[in-house]
Image (tube, rainbow, N blue to C red):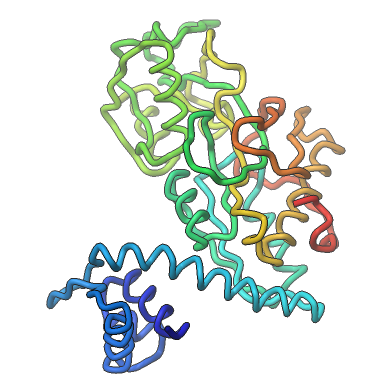
Length: 346
């Protein structure tokens, strides 16, 4: 089995189309088809169901895809490890993030990384936390910034960034928007809710909190981005239970505290693969993130503090940090020179 066969197979699986995969790989379509046939002959199993418009994986193909992605990720890590010994970081750094996560300014972090390591190609994928966790586990992402709940079943390592309480957002003329009002989850029964798709970490956290309180709710309006959610609330089409920092995006909305919930319901973490699968480029980014985190604590950003990411914790014993009240998606103070890789303890 040759590496190029696995590379060709993964490309076709991702694009679900031989012509598009051949164009992306810059090989002929006949050569790509021959490569896949050779792999199928060696494995003695069909890997794709082919139609005139698309191809889909067979059961054998799905089994191979997970293994092939891990193998190719290890090969990339090997190349990057040799480059690191030679004193230069090269290769690709694939990072994932959920929208507007608290505790890290992703754009600023990646910009600082690029200044320190211009030979590394940066790729960014934005998705829900569940999908990001799957991609980190499969080796398609080096790490991801996501929301976690205590009940998340995946075995990924994680390091805490920050945590914050729930807040109810509603239109100023909504019946809930009384001055000084505070509510329990039970008080929201029967309301029309706006929320994210179930793949989002914030949605899973909110669902878990309502389930634990024994309160049934109906999400009538599901969206896949923060600003669409805020638009719907602003038009008084429903209320939303969201991380506290979302209120800074629309100051005209009423933001109401919730009582009887865990003080730190929404926890932002860095999702990480096993230690042996962390690439040199990912280590350098983690080191830079640790330096940014310490700088935020040192300058007392907006009077709040962020948890340290200098030591990776297991899923359950993660320490919680003080709830962050600063606006998300705004720059945090970043260090100038990039610290040397490997010094963060990851």
